[in-house]
Image 1 (cartoon, helix red, strand yellow):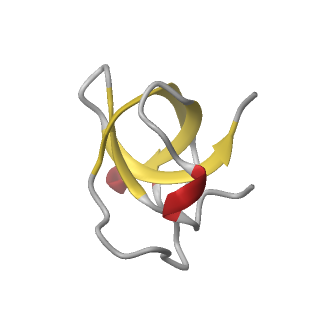
Image 2 (image 1 turned 90 degrees about the horizontal axis):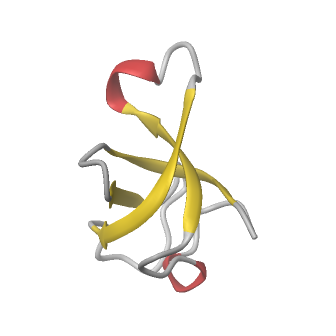
Image 3 (image 1 turned 180 degrees about the vertical axis):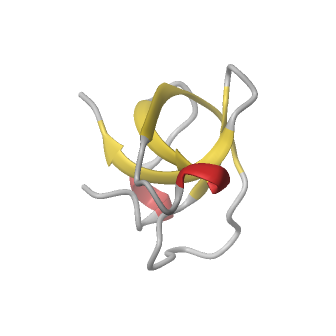
Length: 64
């Protein structure tokens, strides 16, 4: 699961996202999903989410 399918992502899931300002460096931010912002069923660059911390970015990895 790499975060490109909306069906893989649920509220409360622990994920790593890349923030807009970190897209060039690829720096990941870990957190827990609060809201799913992408409406389409999949997205090639990752589903956009808001973390409980308020950070918004695209999911790059899903943690168990």
